Image 1: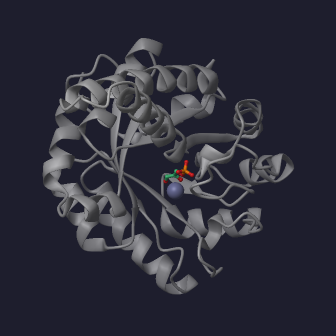
Image 2: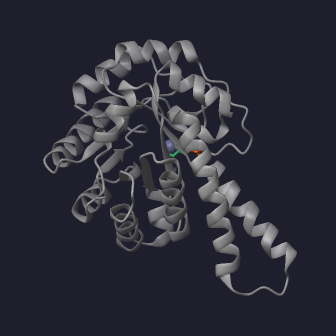
Image 3: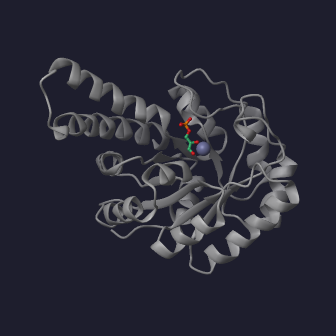
Length: 277
Ligand code: G3H
Ligand code: ZN
């Protein structure tokens, strides 16, 4: 099945009030595990690569091409998405490579600057049939709009979507990036209010910190794309640790990476079902 545009799977999910799991890729085994988990659940998914992960690899193309190949060979629709891009040149590279979705993250820019840059990305991406996710900025701090105390106002989200023409909007409703405990408390009333004010699907960032039941409540209240990274890395790394601890003489990376890939695929399947069923 060929790679899919984000809007193709998001609008269906939004109509059915289902959540679409979007999972971050660090290395090849992540991409293989995420697609295997989605296939086992028989549901679409999003393979996403952050600007930080591109920096880790030193270039977009090697890992990006691998993601595209894995998506094209999948039995379910798979979106290949550039996550948290602050560099419009990187967005251009992703478009040229064949990514089907990009997130432009201008949240640290001044409002007018963010609007203009986001509009420019939308123009270039839409000309190629590629979806754009973006987020409203203006609030500082280390984690920007994803700090736990920060909230998006429904009217600001509505204005931002109308002014930019984006296909999905990331909103701040109580989650925070990179939590290793699942203790975040989301503002469900705010999610419903934004949902009513905004025509495009809503994206929850920092979903690793949100417990299972609460993720389902967030989807029922109106969140659609659910971004999960740290939690899966926890699953992956725990398994690597177990395998290495059980056999200190082991040297073949396939033994521990393969086990981690299997464990991650199982967790992706569980999460995809949890969000969509
Ligand atoms: O864009 C990616 C996510 O927001 C993932 O955040 O690592 O806290 O799950 P997380
Ligand atoms: Zn994020």
